[in-house]
Image 1 (cartoon, helix red, strand yellow):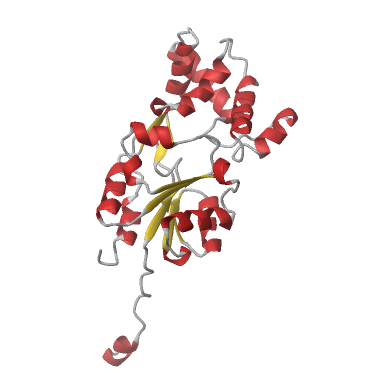
Image 2: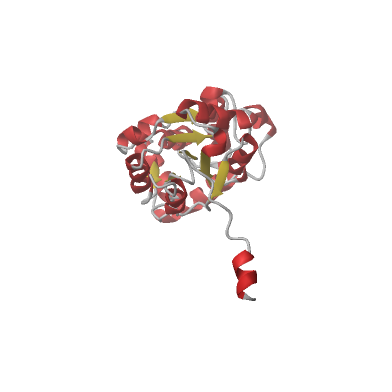
Length: 247
């Protein structure tokens, strides 16, 4: 290529300004505990000690049946179809759906299905990714407002309180509270409104196509594959985009 052609070649497109960042919760900021530990901890609250072999076999069956925070079940029993459809819109439906799925597995442990669900509601049932706190702190230092936008049927604020991260989040936009689920643009509009930013100047960071649905609201989107518990989740990429404006 000649010097003249090189000089006239278009450069990289300008980077889109980012005035706020919206984060998904599960698979983006935190991950549920490892399945065997989940089963053993829940059984212990029911007064039963499970050896690792039995807990592993049971965990495999429970994850296949459908675990909150885990893969979607291949099949939802007809008697759970209604609560399953509403699980991220109503807290009682969320509990009923996942307790009901766990009850389809004969564990031999009385009360295990409820105990498994209750692990979702306590900080010990989750592991924030190692790069979550540093990323949120860096965004706060750069004066970039942050919202947590999640399709979920319970309040995650107590988890953030326990992890001492609440002060780093400006708004929690939870589907069961606002009556909208991602990828509905309305939930992203709500988050941007609470942060006081134009959607076109917001970045949604998540791990699923539902998170990428933010583009329908005008936001930019960054989709990062969910890492295993305890591993770095690549959130530095969001930080790089958000602080590129010279803050």
